[in-house]
Image (cartoon, rainbow, N blue to C red; front, side, top):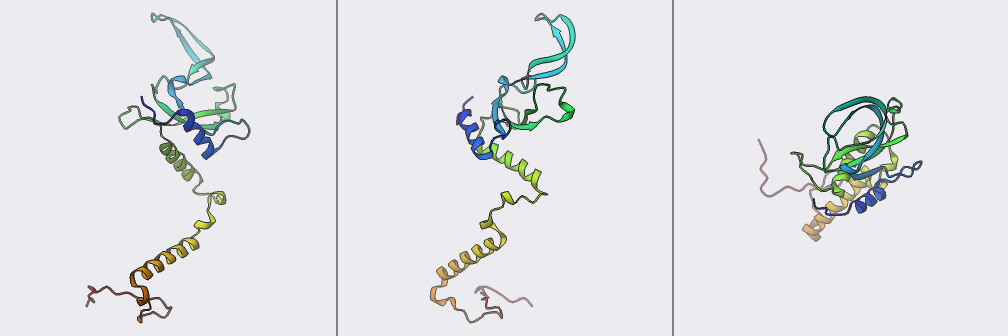
Length: 191
């Protein structure tokens, strides 16, 4: 299981890109190894001996594996979320919890090493879906407005015309607005 970059480095970059929670000081996003994640969870558990003999069922809060039951030996992209009121009983000792968002595996369920580009793509996709109906001026780039894009395109086109035609760029076939119509040599008028 080769890593192209250390998990510590990847998690540092996720903090730099997406920040930390200002109340808990925990990273909003992180990548973890599935086998090392545990949590205090309230539930009903069956106690069984190593030889398979059932001892009892007990309802209590236990320190239990978080993913190992269904995700073995893989990296998981997690997001810090507020524990909903309806789940407060299940996770009694916490107000926030890391929840799995993505498993680094291929379509066959085989291990893939975590990559920052993949994590960024997933996170940006989630943010785009969550905030698509909101006016988030925080994420708008004033240099990337529609007017700026049109002006930049106009400058690129003017530069191309100048490069292609040089001094001959003052065509006689201008429109009323002053724009030029360029007709290719192989143009045939349809009847």
